[in-house]
Length: 142
Image 1 (cartoon, rainbow, N blue to C red):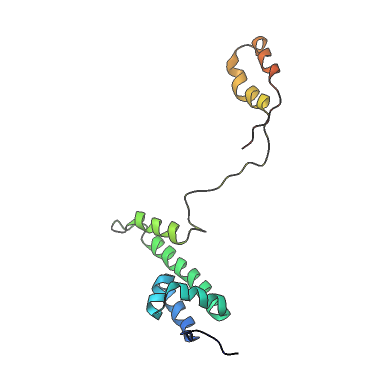
Image 2 (cartoon, helix red, strand yellow):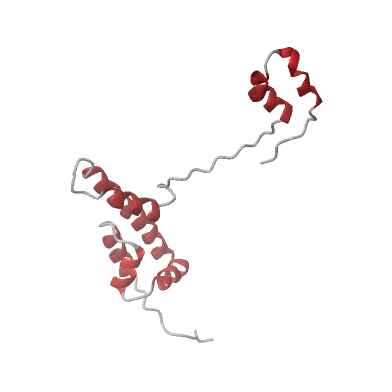
C-alpha cells in the first residue's frame, strides 16, 4: 500500500546542519527556521528517524555547553547581562538550571513529639508541662 500524505523534506544531511547550528548555541526553533520547517516537524523527524533524534540530543548538549561557556567567559564582564543569561539558562535548560528544588519528607512526626521539642521549653517549668500528656498521638500529614 502506498504512503498517504505529503513526502517528507527530511534529508540525512540535516543532522549535520542541526549539530553545526546548535554547537553555536542555537535552539530547536532556530534549527527549524533554518531548515524551513515547523518545530513540530522536527519533533516528528526525531520520532521517526533515530539518526536525527541522536543528532538533536547531541545538539542540545552542545547548545547548553555553548551557553555555559559564554557565561563563564563573561563572569567579570560588566557589560554582560548576567540576569538575562541566567533567565535564559533556567528557562531553556530547566533540567540542569532552576531556582526551585523539590524537597519531600518521607517520615512522620507525632504531635506530642513536635510540641515537646518546640513548644514545651517555652511552657515554663516541667511541673506545668502535664498539659502535654493529654494530647493524642495524631500524625501530621503533609
